Image 1 (cartoon, rainbow, N blue to C red):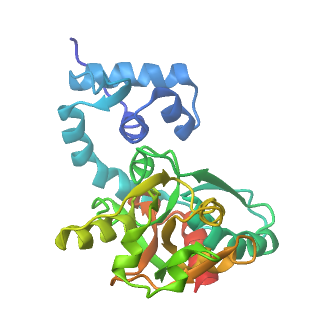
Image 2: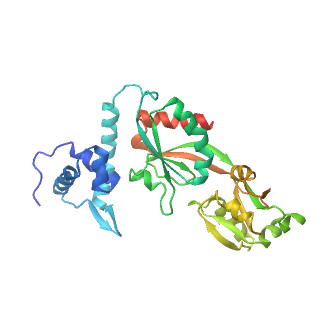
Image 3: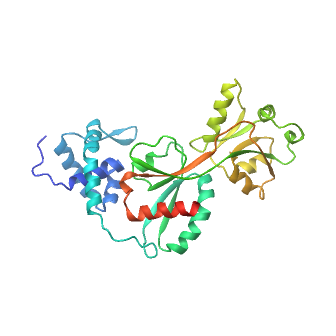
Length: 301
């Protein structure tokens, strides 16, 4: 394959977008150019490096080993260039029409958004926050591929190119229906295991994983009747059954006015769930991104 004569350094920006988005259309949108222009840049990059760079695997585009190696080599240069050339104008939230996306489970949305969006509508009336619901098989990779700008949730092992800021934590409680048979007897681990359970998968299975690990250490287990992806529907299933659920305290407390449920202490020691904000280092110094991160943390704090 012939080499590209006098390669344009702007191709590095195209290369970074392709490696980040792993999709020609999204990479073009990320750079604000047309898809044919991005396809042409990808063709030139393949000629330049003598490598396909992106290959189809399992229905998705994945970087080749050579592309990974090149991206790791060039990324610090690109980040330094962006920092040096970024406009130094102060971000004005009162007039900005910036749009940023936040990925979160319904639990995090419930605890976070009622405190955030009403204030945001006053302090940054033209700013648009797009909420992306959490889905199985997704998570922090949404930041790597530039599908979202921020993620709020619990992810214990972020990659080195992600930044993290702690937001809040809270304990778990058990919920049962009003009049549940367990309320007439001693509440302990035996009572907890006597009935079926609703498992709240919620993608990271924070409390569920901790519960199952503790029980496994005692050679015991729960009987799972159903696995849910939504915290908010859980109390309404509990109120019409003898099932038990273990969930964040704030959801249980808020739902007592809507569902006929009773909260009980979890009969084992569970660590509280810690919710943090995650973003890719490429946006560390972006003025709008940095403002929203600080604003969100101040609202929660």
